[in-house]
Image (cartoon, rainbow, N blue to C red; front, top):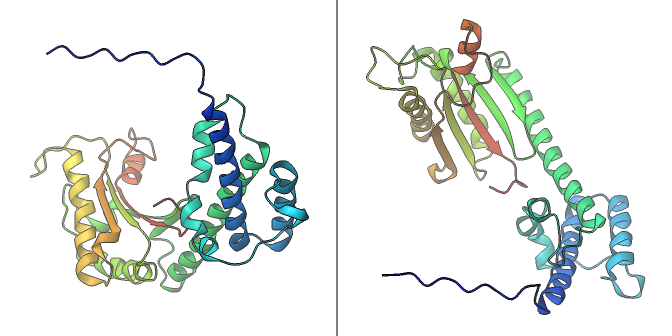
Length: 268
């Protein structure tokens, strides 16, 4: 059956779009205000509020603050992706660039996320040092998460997904740390080098990396109080190397398991 060819819309933006765009800008600014009440210090808030008031006249009679309420307490969840929205659109419906104040708000939110991850990383790093595991686990962070990287040789024999006996005490300590963030999203990723599989029950590195991520997931599920619904796991094979696969040292670094803890401001 032939499909109907869609009709071309009239050229130019409809008239309602300008009004709608203005309304969306005002709403975004309003929610940024609510978010800033709970995440920024007083001085930063006053500066941001004054800037918004001059540009958009959100507050009447020169007011620079609003009372606590339901929306403020939930502002974080409502605004997690505001910076992504601004960066993805770049322009308003009328073709005008996003106001500088909104861009600054997005940057402030990104900075808040980064600071949240940095604080989380410092706490976890102190915990690892107390347990004398700082040399066994590498810590990195982004604005979304804190990442713990465990060397694959520490956890598994070559071509195997069975956890080594000597790796279990380390995973036990990692599990204790993860339990402190049981309400956060936790992600487990398995990675390999690019050497083709041979003499193993796994036909390729994709299967091997996935099996290793699952082994860590199953161990944490059985030996911690973590909710499995909050844990994601996947095998990434050889496709995201962090070192040169042409050297033995580089391949050893690429064989790894990464565990990510997403901070409270992330979009997960």
